[in-house]
Image (cartoon, rainbow over all chains, first blue to last red; front, side, top):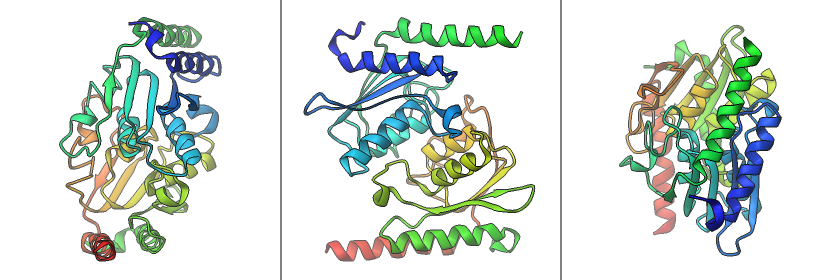
Length: 156
Length: 156
């Protein structure tokens, strides 16, 4: 599936690419106010740059969006991410009451939405966003594959 | 079990109590450098104050500790929390490579360590801290029970 339906997804892809260039795992996200279509926040991963184990692209978007909205809950927002969110980010998405989650590549190893703990399917999960996965899957996956291939080469 | 064995747990309890007084869910945490015994960070929940859905006590401790250590990984640290961490915090604890997690009350509704997704038991979890639960369980639980009882009374 291509991103024509989701223009904000391109912003997430740009953020992923920029993160990779900074030496971070190339994952990007964009948070959109669904009422206006405005991008409230867009980030790539920054765990190394900020020395912050929680600084995934999604978390930075949620925090920035909530700060701007002056509320920890963002039920009017959609989140676009290039990779299936991990359990940490999925739980944060639920706490923030995000309306819709759109993600790119599936992540069988680290994902927490369609894999592993499948957070939104837990009976104790109070808010489940609408979820669409597999958007621009090949493009998002290629960014990650290239990044890890280059890193392996560096360490050989 | 009483906290004599874990002096840092008292700091977590103080933080929980202070959080409740600020109108936040009374959960507190303290991050300790296990090599020196020094408390690197201590926080209560601040989601409402900071308008940040990710500002749980544990997350604030991990972020502050990692910032001080200038590394997103803290394998020399132990985390003390008054309540069983949720899935978001459990995943962050794993990312941060925390050595040992000590928590107070069990949380059948929102916990992600011994309940719900049981994050550290997922086959995709790469780092499992040593876990001790049930420390000062009644004290930690009483703080939460009193907080929610008072809130119910306010809304009646």
